[in-house]
Every structure is written in structure tokens, then in C-alpha cells.
Length: 477
Image (cartoon, rainbow, N blue to C red):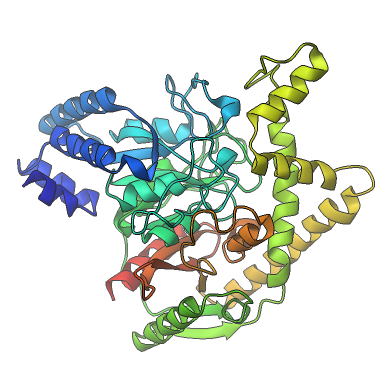
């Protein structure tokens, strides 16, 4: 009975109601999720499970609920991506480079979760240093899609998406640099939101590209995405770019009045767009019109430049951020090293995987003398053009709609040998990343073979409340 009841939980609100009614205990819930993790361990979503600790947390939080002193996330069991620091626990960014590293402090987002009595059940597999779109670059092996284990989970937050998809936890935290929350959410049929850049502190999150990285939730309901975002958002003195703007009560979702929505024509005519996704998005547009929204096409002439711009800038930042992992300051040190030079060369060669090495070399190249102006400086100018164009569109529309991905989840191994094809999987998601705008991926049906599809909705800066309210209405209608 417990497994049957718990399996249907999609919202924290329902869990809390059943706990208060005595139908369920927090410990029973944790034990159920632990059973799920064990049962579906072949999916490779979890790198480490905090079994005893989560059971002890459950007992403590049950007492708080009984005493009426529990936080707003009491009863929420959550997994965290393996690039978010949790004091006293290992964090490796799914890399050999940090295989045995134990965090000496907690990320701000972790402290905020724990303060509100969330239970962290384990750390989740991801692409190495969050670099990938399929969760195949992880040192610990690929994460498999629960719907079809032959398919990828998406990346880089693949473990975060599959853990929620397979009901191993109620929610998870991922990070999103170019679509790493939204793309796996689409592939796994769950909800993933990238907040406005600076809305959530990056303190304690292992950096990939600092002017892009953001933490966000992956959930089974918009309500849970809203309350999680509410908890983790806000100014943090430890992150000097974090915004001081007041955090709205995201969890108080309002009824969305009819909206004016733009869809980017070029995304539906993009080369390589899966025909089923094109058909599905057209159906969603027709549905939105039928329920009273205004939906109109707009032109975005820079679509062919977004992937190149994104990868030039992010690899440059990665080259800088990952320079500290050298076997001297941080990370894996080669046992074969015999002097200073060999320590650097061998430690980095052994510690980093192929994709991370590729991006470091690309970034070093675009920052090098003679190429800086031709690539990096020019990409910064194109980023400004893209940002200006998208913000101009949003002056006339409430939201911008695109497919989340150009294809459904593809076969494991299908694209890993062709980096360019893999990079093009980000073509729609990187628009919000380059502009720093909030974007959410919500489920919008399946392919004929049952693979999940997602639709991406972008909003204005710091208007996550409107994005969440609209998404809830969209899913209910």
C-alpha cells in the first residue's frame, strides 16, 4: 500500500497532507525512495546514496512536523547534482580529477534546502564538469533513460532528470549552462527551469562557465519547481553577482490571464528538427490559440549563430576555470609524474575525459594571441546582438516559445563520436543561456514510440513567477 500511494506522489503538498493526516511517515517515504534507487540502480542515476543519513534526517523532520516547527520543504526528498558542494560529502563533478574530493563547505543552495528541512538522499550522475548533452561523458558511465534504457537521459543533469523521472526522489537540483536542466527534463518528461542569471547563488557550485552557470530544480510538478526556486533564490554575499532583487512568492501561483506569445519561426524550420517535434509544436501552438492566447510567429535571424557563439564563450571560460585542476593546487595527481612539468601534463591528461580536454583546448585556442579578437571578442559582440534581439521581442510579447530540443532522446552512443552533432542538440536552449533570461521546459506529449517531448517557454528577466503560473495553466489545460 505504501509503495502504491507513494508512487503517485507528484507534489510536495500531497506528501505533506498525508504525513499530517498520519497516512504516511517521512521515514516510510525515504525508505520507499531508497528502495526505488536500489531497484533501478542499473539506470546509473545516483553516484552515491546517503542511506543512513537520510533515514536519520527523516526521523528528525518527522518530530519537527509533529511539533509544528518544520520548514516549508519538510517531506521533500531531493537529489543533488554531483557538482554542488555538500559539506562532509564527496563531490566530483563526475570526473576522475575530483574522484576522492570531499566538500569542506556547503553550497548556498544546499544550506537553504536544509534550513527548510529538505532531505538530501544522494548525489546524482552528470556529464563530466557539466560538459555534455547526453550524460555520456561522466567518469561513472552514462545515465540511462527510464522510459527506454537504450536512450540517453540528456545532459548534463541527466542523473537529476532520471532520478525524478523514475521516482527515486520527489525533486532534484541540476545546473544549467546551455540547457543542462531543460534538455534532460524534456528527454525524461519532467519539468526543468533555468532561472534568470544571478537569481540563484553559484557559491559552492563547481564552475564550468561562470557567466552562464545557474542552479535550478527538476520536478514532477510546477508547484514543486516554484517552491524550490523560492527557497534557493536570493542575494548571497558569497556570490558577488547574485541579485539583490526581492524574491517573489513563486509558490503562490496565480491564474494566468490570456497571454501574447511569440514563437520563433526559424526553430520550426531548422535543419535537423525531428518531424514529430515539429508536428507536436504546431499542435501546441494551435492548442494555446484555442484556449485564448495570442500566438504569433516572429523572426530571429541569429539562430544559425547561437551554438557557435555559445561554445566559443563557454569553452573560453572553461579553459580559465579548469586551469586550477593541475595536480598541484587541486585534483588528481599522477603517480607516474617525476618532475613539475610531468605532474601538470600527466595529472591533467589522466584526470580529464576527452570532452573536457576538447573544450579546454578550444577555449585556450580562442583566447590565444592572434585569435582572441577573431573569435572571443567577436562572440561577445554577437552575444549582445542576440540579447538585444530577444529582449526586443519580449517588449511586444509575454513569452517566447520554442521546442526544447531538436530531437527526442537518442540512442546511447549515437552522437558521442561527433562533437558537432552533439553540440547542435543545444540549439534552442542556448538562446536563454546567452541572454541570461529565465526558461522552463515542460512536457508536451510523446513520440509515436512513447519518448517524451518538451516545449520551452522563455520569459522576461526576473519574471519567473509569470513563467511558472503560465506553465501550470498550460499543463492543466
